[in-house]
Image (tube, rainbow, N blue to C red; front, top):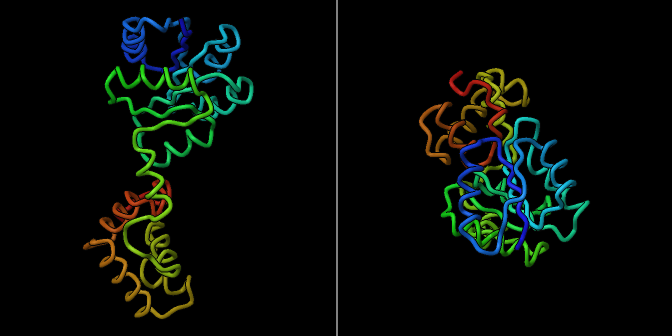
Amino acid sequence: MKRVLLVDDHDLIRQGLRRAFERAEDFTVVAEASSVAEALAVAAQHKPDVVLMDIRLPDGSGLDAVKKLRAANPQMGIVVLTMYAGDEHLFGALEAGASAFVPKDAPAEDVVAAARHAAASPEAFSAADLANAMKRRLAPSGPQISPREREVLGLLADGLAVAQIAKKLYISESTAKTHISKLYEKLGAGNRAQAIMTAMRMGLIKAQTADDPLR
């Protein structure tokens, strides 16, 4: 029987995971935790074969916990289970040393299968969309934004007006307007708010960059 530690700050999710593993004949849930600190302490106490780790926890990132668990336990299987299933978090889990990455909306059988993989091959990373994610990272799709356009995009996200952008970049207002027009065209946007929201979805700018995209 493989020993499992469940880490999630939502009691209902932990209950659902526990039931899924109770139905499997090769796992037993030995402990639960709802925070990074608790997870590290419980893992040290129970020394589970597999840890299921959420990313967003009340006292920090589950990925930081994964790094610490991996450093202390090279043979521990670690499955990152999260509702944030984008490429950024997938590669974050890979780089942190996780054994598998599974979205929370995956079937329970997939979660248990990921735990089996993690227990058998803790150092071999597995994720359903890994191949496509690698393709996107190596050959990103989407509009080709020039370095200057990227600067303009960042200033738009900061809420600067055309005149301010021109002054900041030491260009004429007409040149600034041209850059903005090209950006709107490449992003398929009709205004600043649409351009910023589209750029955020494409990962061209970070969400925190645009405090108020409607300005």
